[in-house]
Image (cartoon, rainbow, N blue to C red; front, side):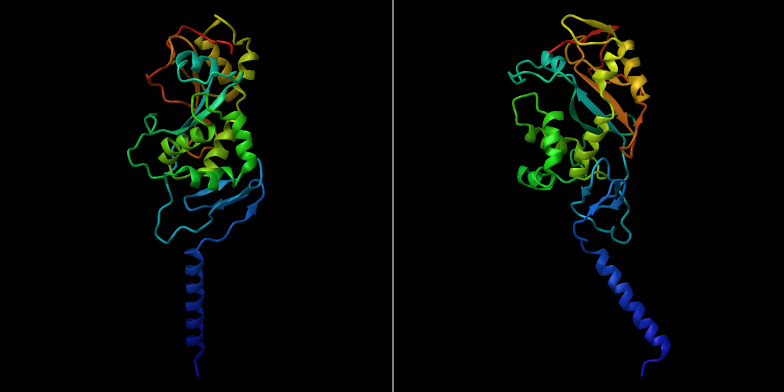
Amino acid sequence: MLKRHDVAALVLVFVVFGIQTCFSQNIGRASFPKGFVVGTDSSAFQVSNETFQDQMIIALPVGKKPPIPVPAWLVQTWPAGFCAAFSKECLETTLPASFTIHGLWPIDSDGHVLDKANPPGKKMEMEEFKTRVIENFPNLATDLMKKWPSLIRRSTKHFWLYEWNKHGRQQTVLQPANYFFTTRDMVDRTDLLKALKAEGIVPGKNLRYPIVGIENAITKKIGYKPLLLCYKTNTLSELVLCVDAKAQNFAPCKEQKYPNLCAGPHIEFPSV
């Protein structure tokens, strides 16, 4: 007959074994309400505007360190200015009359866009990308078709995949679906065109505005000065907002001489 302390030890063994087994396996899919914090194979993240069905919820193995979050550039494109610089590559269709998403680009501590030859995130082919992002989250995909279109001669879905493989996987905190949810949600908080129009800055043919005026209009909305990119001399092509390492709030950008910064003092803000 087992003694009391032997029974207690045996029960403890079963409990520990059960916990380890649970931690070593995927916990199945589940829907979580707004604001619920869940753990993924890379980190914890907070669900944003809608119920989010996590793709793979697992516990970190014992001894595995969670990934280190990195800040990022949230890059939005002004289509008329972008296509003025890349007219040969742009689609011969009516351009959007609003800022569109280019991507969420992780940066290093010095403020430079990460471009590791062997980034830590998973590279995906189109079939896997369709399954994990497009087909699994059809409402997100529909929204991104309007807000994150391809302006050049490649499909919009291939553009999304390109952004993930080039920039998204430079970090491991945001897994593919949440990378796109987060980018979309951060952009939805900006409404750059409305912020500019509120200060009398409207797009038009041969209209030029002081760089400082554009910067002040966005700073008034976001709280931090943006970076303005001109791929063609003195024509606004893209606008960058800096995002904190948790990808939840805007943050100040590093003051550096980045490539393609608008030189000013005045730049064109062309209409479509």
